[in-house]
Image 1 (cartoon, helix red, strand yellow):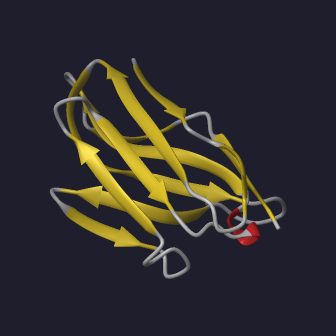
Image 2 (cartoon, rainbow, N blue to C red):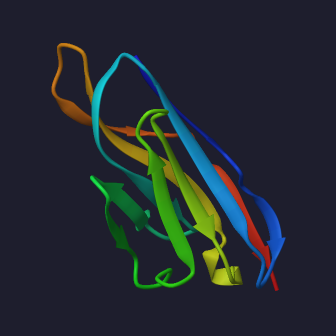
Length: 119
């Protein structure tokens, strides 16, 4: 099987920074996209940032404040978040499009990590 394990969430004051990390492990043959989504209370899950083959895509709300990076050798993805605001408060989910051995590509999700930004 495949697991995505996140770390790095927490409580931070407005204007502060956090770095989220996610490591994929298991029977992984190949990974296309890796990235981060978030879900605030009462809202739908939304894209934060994704990366594939060096190409990145960010939500307009985080452009200029967040940087996504990836270590392909370690199957990890990082999200550096700066100038955090209370509206960034959400559960952040790691996402990866993974092909397991003998299978086709499918989506995998982490368990989520809470990010809370106080004003």
